[in-house]
Amino acid sequence: MSISGGEAAVIAGIVGGGSAILAAGLAAVATYKVTDRQVKSAVAVSEAQRAHELRMAKDERQQARRAEAYLLVVAFMDTSDRWTSWGYFDLLNPGSLAQPTLPEPDDQLRARQAATLFLSDEARDLFDRYMDASLEFMRIRRICDSDRSEGAVSNLRISYEAIQSASKVMIDRLRAELDA
Image (cartoon, rainbow, N blue to C red):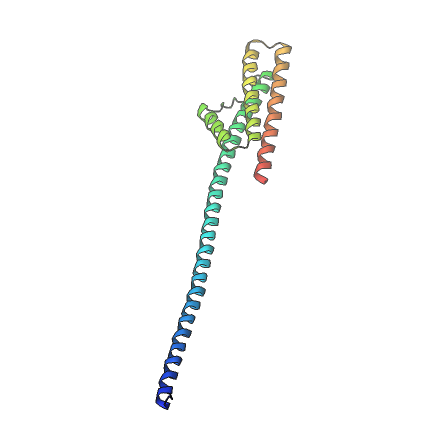
């Protein structure tokens, strides 16, 4: 059987057309795979960037809360330290200094809450020691109001020095934590 020139042209056209269709199909699949890979990559980059932005925002909020907590604690300690200094020096030289106000109970509560929620374990322990030393000073100061014996005044001096030391250690710790 022989194929005429017209038939050969038709067969060549069908094979050529099939090849063109096959080539177009392969090109479409390749284009789809490349595009799909690009889209998935863009989505992954976008998700990673969004997760990073969320972490950064969360860290920023936590740092702001922590800084506010540090300020509350330091402000409370400053007020307390001023009263403690007055309490000690006024006993030695009555009336020589104006009496500052004690920290308000709400300020003490807020400072304790801030310490509990936002300070490191070590800083919280130091704050607790500071508070214990402050309460002990106030107890001894009340005793000295009626008993100005050398022993009572000596106990007050020792307590005052303990508060000064606790305050310095606490402030140094907070500074170290802020620098970290």
